[in-house]
Image 1 (cartoon, rainbow, N blue to C red):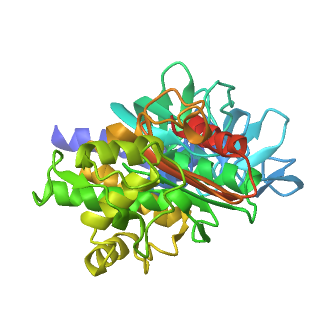
Image 2 (cartoon, rainbow, N blue to C red; image 1 turned 180 degrees about the vertical axis):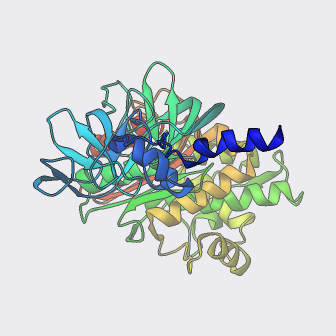
Length: 428
């Protein structure tokens, strides 16, 4: 039986068999080939989708054909691209087809997605710099600038912070977004003061000095130019007397006798000048308080002489060294040559003393002219007049108090007021 079965199988093995193949010739698209062959590195080199806001990293060519062989034109860096679709060319390169029918390689080395990278809530205060710009959104390519009523050198409060490839931007509610490069974290208004002084008051007959007390920032024109200071030099007397009051060696109710000697020492003022106290000695006793008020409010020469004679010891060595140290000058009460900066230094020293002198200087017979004429906040000031010289030095109690010192030669009181108004309108 087994032999019969074997014989029956012989024809089967001797018969040729037709081979059946499962392989087919498949025609793959460029996209399919790219997907099969692209590795991980390709995803870091090429885009696999159209970016939200595509822009050029660098100046680049675009091409008429998808194989990037025929150049069409050159596009500048940071140009925004209008992309219709992404495709794979015959060289297995991803390319973008642009809306105008041209092509560019979809390379991350050529193109970036210019979008907001991060955003957070903040609450911070800044000052606008000159030439700032305001945008609808944090700046990316295509963002539009907007017009607002914001002004350079003014304070703003920001509520949002965002970063893009172009930098950091802050939102001013109701206005728009501003670059951090256009914001100062400190009060920068003195830059504007200096601009105005340069544009309008850069004249040889002016010595002007402005100092913001909170920031210690300054501006000026010829601020070290000296002139005859006239009654402005009385600031030195006022400072010195206040110093003695504060160290306890002098009291406000101390009495000083008005004798002929007080008008006849070498550094005394001419008694016939400004003031209401008798021009000739009356042998009366005057309190230190009354004398200080007379100097501050009426620029009284005799009152100055009495204080200088008794308390400043005829403006002796101790007085001179003290005032010289404050002003960083070789102060000479007889010559009374000062610059606007020197006068400002004295006024700042009085401000730091914070004594009654400030209130006396804030209510004077000269408040309707010069620095204080048009300013509607407290102004503590000391005027000086002699020959063609007209001066005024003040602490202006704006929101951030500042010192304003104006020395002039052959100018008017109105000129001083105009300078003061321009500075105050910036710093108020």
